[in-house]
Structures are given as C-alpha cells and as structure tokens.
Length: 283
Image (cartoon, rainbow, N blue to C red; front, side):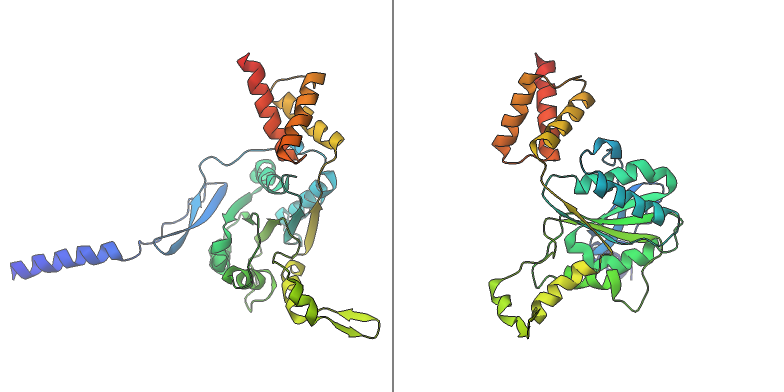
C-alpha cells in the first residue's frame, strides 16, 4: 500500500506540471498592464516602470492631441466617449500620445492595458475582468493591421460594436495603425464593384474591410512633418537634453540625419537629439 501511495504521489506531481497554472490576481495598484498568455491562460500583468512621456512634449500635432485629450476627459468623467483609431505616417506621435495620456491622467483614475494583436481574441475576457473596477481603462492596440484570415479581426469587430453583451462602461479601445482600413486591399476586389446608373457601389469584400474601421467612433489622421515642424521638434528635444539652442551646426546635422533616415518625423527628431546631446557631452 505504501508503494502504491508513493507511485500515486509521483504521478500527481507529473500531472500538476502539465496542467495550466492557476490564474494570478492582477496587481490593481499598477497604472499600466500587459495582457499576456501564460501556460495557455490570459493574465493581466502589471508594468513596473511605464514609459513616461508628457503631452507637452508632443509637438506639431495640436489638433489630434486636443481631440484625443477631450475624448479621454469625457471618458474619465463618465460621459459618453468613443473608441479611437489613429492612422497615418509613422513616427508622428500616435503611440506616444496614448502613453502621454497615462502620464498626465493616472492621478484621475486612468489606466492603460496593452494588448497584442494575437491576443485580441481575449478582448471580451479582458472586458469582464475590468468591468467592476472603479478605475477607467484604455485598452491599447499598437500598430494594428490584419490579414484576411486572422481571428483577431472579427474579435475586435465584436468587441467594438457587435456582441449581445454590452462593453464595459469603464473601458475604451485606442488603436494605432499605418493604414486606415486595417486590412490589405487587392486589385481583384475592384472587380466586385457594381455601377448603378451614376452610382458606384463597392463589392462585399471591400465593404467588409471598411466595416472594422467604421466601428471606431473617432478617427484621427497624422501626416508627415515638413522641415520647419521637424526642426521645431528637434529644438524641443535638445532643450530636454540640456542644449539651450539649435545652432547652425546642429541644424545642418539634424537635416542630414533626417535625410539619412528617409523621414522627417517626431521619432527621428528625438533620435537625433539624443545622438547630438550625447556627442556634445562626450566631448
């Protein structure tokens, strides 16, 4: 009997190693979270050191910033507010705006949950987890785009506006993408277009692809910066790193840096300022 009990205990230990771990209660004291799958089970993991950037650091996107801040203030005060889709040129501050909202409004009860595209199928589970919390949560999906057969596409459509269950009142979805319609569009789809008199009616495939982005109540478009805007952002970040003015030498270097990167964006301006400030201190 003792031998059998020992064998049974060994067997149970092996089985426990194969079973998914019990869910860990989220650390509700955190301000930012990542949704991650651990041993096949989704968990809300607190971020120990969130990326800190302030709204006043984001330059030359004032209309987009004002619209996003207004929508977020409505949300924080329990007023009607929209899910947001931010699209446009890379490096223009789309993701940084969302991170800056957390920095400036965390003391008002705002929290941020980052969800990867592969985990969008868990959105309803995340909504149920957050529903009874007193804080207000922005679910953040960065650099969003889909192939036609990805399951996250339909899951996001349902979460935005299409489930029999209502979305949590304390949760909004903010997404960024480089493309407006979030899915690739092919030449063959134009063959589905019908002409009714002078009216053009897109085919069902095109309508299906457009329907996802239309479920976001607020669209914000971001455009490439011109030279003056780029240099203004460079000047701001140089001051942030302790360099009081943009000298002719630094100006020329900034333009050459952007030319080498093939882009005049806020991200490139920040990268140049870090590089230039580091060079000057090294000297």
